[in-house]
Length: 566
Image (cartoon, rainbow, N blue to C red; front, side, top):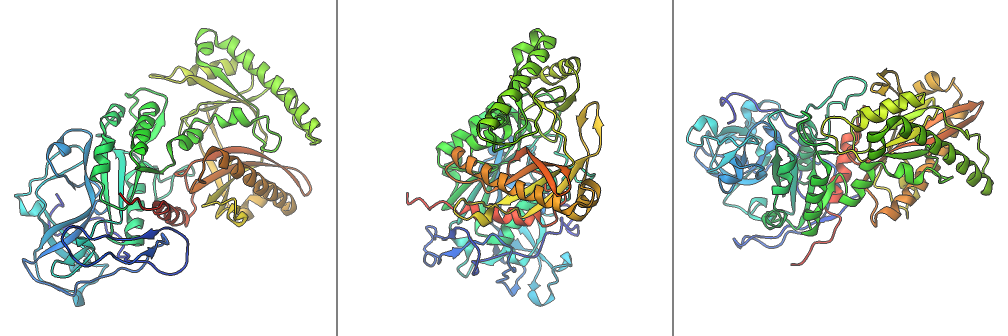
C-alpha cells in the first residue's frame, strides 16, 4: 500500500492550518459537534484561503496507542482511499473518502522534541485501522499485511482520542472531486514554453494534489473529500448525485470537476477528455441537490466559456472588439465543404460591412477591413490549442472545415470561422475575485505577454512568454507609450467584459483570464482585440505566484454561500 516502511512518500508541505486569522475576505467556518457529545459548536472563523502555520497538538505518543489520523490522498496519489463498502471501490466509478479522519495505531513511540519536518524518519509511524481500502483502478488493499498499511505521517495530522479535537466534530466543508481514474494517467505537461509549469494541467494529479495541499494548509484538517474516479464518459451517468449529497457531512458543500468536456465519443486515447453532454448532465444533477459547482464554474457559465459561442454572438458589438466570427453547420461541411467555405467567407464580408456601419452610426472611428481574405477556423469544446487552424484561401478553409469537423468520433455540430487579426503580442490578464461594486478588483493580479512562435500544419502550438520589459523590446519597438496605451485599452475592455459577464451569471466568477491581442500602430498608439475568455483552470503560463493566488481565491469561494439550516 504505502511501500516498504522506510520509503518516504512524496514529501508534502509541513504547513497546515486551524482556525482563522485577521484580514482578507472570505466566508466563515463553523464546526458542529457530531453525536458523540464532545464539546460545543466551534467558534466562527474567517476563511482567508491563505496558508497558515501548522498546528501540532501532540507532544508524545506511545507505541500501540490508537489515535485519530487525517488521511490525505495527495501524500500518496497512486495509493488507496477509504470506502464504506467494497463494491464502492471495485465497481466503477470507484468512490470513497480520499481525505478525512480515520483511526490508526502508533507503531513506535514518538516525541515532538525529535521531530524534524524535513526528515521523514522523524515523522509518526502509524498503521491504518480502517478495514476497507481501494485504489482508483478498483484494486483492494491487503489490510492483513502490516507493511501494506504502515505509513509515516506528519504530526499535525494526528489527534489523541482522549481530548476534544477536529476529529470528533463534523467537517466544516465537504467536497466531491470528480476525476480521471483510467489506466492511462493524465500527463501534467509541465515542460516547454506551452507547458503548464510544475502545477501541471488541471485534470492531472499534480494540479489536484497542489490544490488539496493548499486546502489543508489553509483550513487544516476540518474538511473531507469524496473522490469519484471515472474511466470514461459513460461512468459519469452512473454517479448518483442524491447519494453523494447524503454522504457529505460538511456544513458547506461543493463539487470540483477535473475533466475536459469535448464533442467526441470515447476511444480517442486522451485521458480525462469526456463527452460534454454527459458531464453537463451530471453537473446539473449535482447542482439540483444543492452541491454547488466550485470548479471550474456553475454548469451554465462553464458552458459559455467552453463552447466559445460568445465569439459569434458578440463579434458585432463595437465596444468588445471581438474578431468577426461565423459558425459553419456540420451538415454544410459534410455535404459540400468547398461551398461551405465560400459561404463562410461571404458571411465574414457581410459582417465586416455591418461592423463598419455600426461603428459609423455610433461615431466610432475604425480602420477595420470591410473584406476578409484570411482567418482561422477552430472548434469550441477544445483544449490546449488542439483544434485551431489558419487559412488564406477558400480551398485551405474547406480543407480545415473537413479536418476539424470530421475527426474520429466527432459530435462537432459547427466550426467557427474567424477573420485574421494582426497583432504583435497577446496579453494574458489574470483577474481574481472581480466585483462590479469594486472597480479596483478589475486590475489583473498578473499580466503575461505571449507570442506564438511556430505553426504546425497551420495550427498554433508553441509560444514565447515575456515579462513587460521583454515585451517592450521584442514586440513593441521599445515604444513604452504604445504598450501603455494597449494596456490602458485592455483594462477598459476587461471592465466591459466583466459587466457582460454579470448578465450571464448572478455571481461573478472567481477567476477569469482575459487574453487580449495588441498591435502597435505607431508612436504611442496601439489597437486591442479580444482573443479569449478563459475559465478558471486556465494555464498559469509560468506565473510563479499563480497557484497560490488562485487556490486561495478558490478556497474562499468554498465558504461564500450561507449554511443551510436543514
